[in-house]
Each structure stands twice: as structure tokens, then as C-alpha cells.
Image: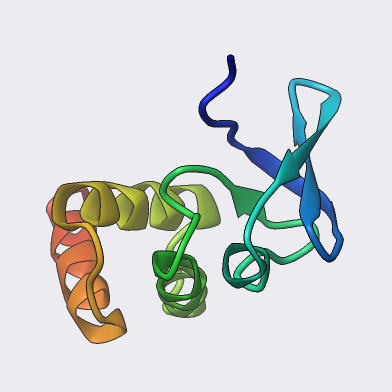
Length: 104
């Protein structure tokens, strides 16, 4: 049994999303609230799922707007979300900036 996948969202339907992992598209059943957080072309996975998905994409977008490379921003935000679970956008942004500040 597969318990999680992480990859690029190819499409989002009413009851499933297609996530590309290693060149293979997996149809993944999900609740409407989880599907609402997914965006075509964006990364999906355990750290991006659920209510934190909107926080993740907002904070990554803000960090990229501040000039951080996208991959570095994603890694910092994922680390904060994994460490702290659900958090508000401003809290995740502050902690991600603190993490990124130590890597410069």
C-alpha cells in the first residue's frame, strides 16, 4: 500500500488529483478540502497537503518575491511546517526567514 506521494500536480478533479512522481502519473483520491489546496504545476506531498498547503504556497511565493531561490524557499518552508505542523502564514514566514538567514 502507498501511504503518500510527493510530486508535481498534473490535474485536479472533483474527487482526485493526478500527481506525477518519477515520470509516472498517480491518480490520488482526496477530500474536496485537500483538493482545493492543490494547484496544477505546483508541488504536492505530505508537507503540502491539508490546510497548511495554502500557507506553504503563500510563504514560498513571498520568499521568492524577496529574492530567494524557489528550491531554497520550498525547503525552508517544508522544514518549518514539518517541525511545527499547522501554523499561521506570518509565523511560518518568520521562521523560514530565520532559517534562510543562517544559510547565507
